[in-house]
Image 1 (cartoon, helix red, strand yellow):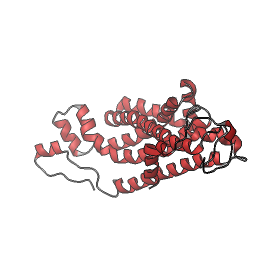
Image 2 (cartoon, helix red, strand yellow):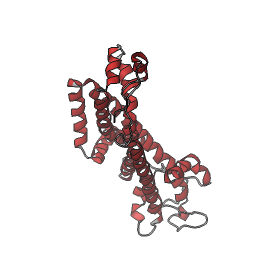
Image 3 (cartoon, helix red, strand yellow):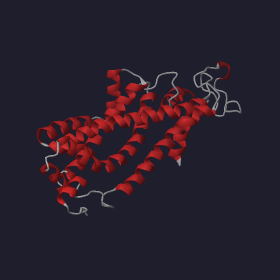
Image 4 (tube, helix red, strand yellow):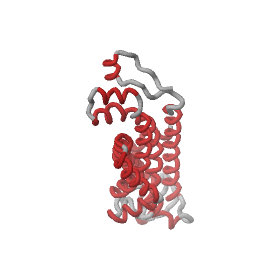
Length: 279
C-alpha cells in the first residue's frame, strides 16, 4: 500500500497542487502550515506540499534509473564471469571486489566529484555503487545453473554462447535479481537523497527530497515542517520497497520452491523426455 501510494503520487501528484514548486514568495517564508500552504512554505516562500509532490516523481525516477544502471552492467559482468570462468572471472570479480572495498556513500561521492554535481551524475554514481552487488548475485546463480543437464544439452546441440547465456541461463537468474532490485531501490533512493543533502545531487531549485532536507536543516528549530515532510516521505518509501523486497524473497526463494528446471524446452523437445525439477 505504501509503495502504491507513492507511485500514484509520482504519476498524478503534481496535478494535486496548483502551486508552482519553484515559485518564490519571500513575504510568506517560514510561515507555519495553513489552509493556503498545507505543509507551510520554505525559506524562500515556496510551497513545501507542492515541492513534496513534485519531488516524489524525481526521487522515484532517480531510484529506478540508478538500479537500472546497476542491474544492466552488474548483470552483464555476473553473466560473463560466472559462465566463462578463468581469467574473465578473475579479472571481473577482482574489479568488483575493489568497488566493494569502498563504502557505498564514499564511492558515490568520489564518482560525483569526478563527474560534477548534478542529478544525472548522482544517478550514475548510485548505479555504480550497485554494480558489484548485482554482479555477485548473478554470478552465483550462473555458477549454479551452468552445471545443470539442460545447459549441457544446449552446448551439445551447438547452441551459440549468446543464446545459452541470455535465453537459457539468464531467466533462472531473474528471481534473486528481482529481489535484490527491489531492496536496491530503497538503498538507491536513500543514497541519492544523501548526495543531494550534501549538495552533490539535485541542484536548486529542483524539488528533490534530499535537497529539501539539506536546504531546510538550518531551520530545524524554527520551521521543522520543512524537514519533517521530505524526511517522512523518504522513510515511508524506503520502508515500502524493503517490505516488497522481503515479500518477493519469501515468494521466490529457490530453497522454498523449485525454481530451476533441469531441461530447457528446446532440449526437452530434442531428447523427448520430460523435465525434472531440481529439489
